[in-house]
Structure formats: C-alpha cells, structure tokens
Image (tube, rainbow, N blue to C red; front, side, top):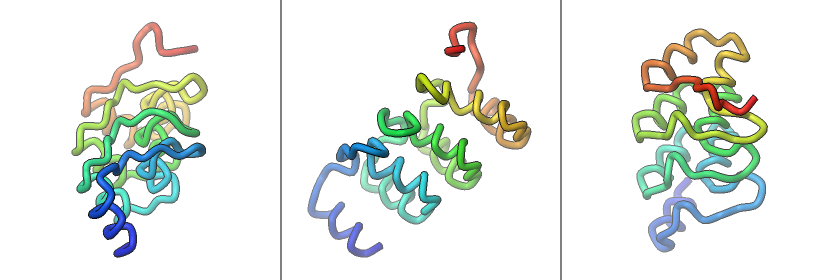
Length: 119
C-alpha cells in the first residue's frame, strides 16, 4: 500500500487509464480492496470515471456486492445514473440480483431507472 501511496504522491494522475478496468479505482473496486479505494479517492480519483470492463466503479462495486465500497463511492458522490451498454447501471444490477439492501441504498442516493435505461 505504501508503494501505491508513493506513486500517487509523485504522480498526479490517480485516474491514469488502463485497458481492462479503465482506471486504477475500478481495478481496486473489482478486487474488493477498500483501503486502496479510499487511498485513490483521497488522491483525487474520480468516483464516476467511465471506461473499462464495468463502465464505472459504482457498477463494478454493485456487481461485486461490495457494500462498504459502494457507501464510500456514494459518499464521494459517484454518479448513480452512470450507465454501461452491457451492465446498464448500478440500480439495474442491484434489482436484477434481488439485493434489496443495495437497491434501497442506491434509491436513497437518488438512483432511479428511467424509460431509457438501456434495455
């Protein structure tokens, strides 16, 4: 973890692009590494960055059912409406997996499915 902190302290782009996950934040979310998620956000990573396998960190966290990471992303104002052609959005994933706790959390954060939700 200190190696990542050193890199972030000396390299000012916490949103550097990568091919598979789009950004280091989405990679950390996908791996379930909450400490790394917090560190990246502390160094300015965009919680709503787009790209990569899942589209956004919030969609990746929802697919992985990573509740504490989702709370952290929402606290940092992740875009609950961000979408992806395959995974639609975080709320769609929560409802689709019948995760009512996660669905409630996203609804309380302002998420909603609109008529153009992608299906």
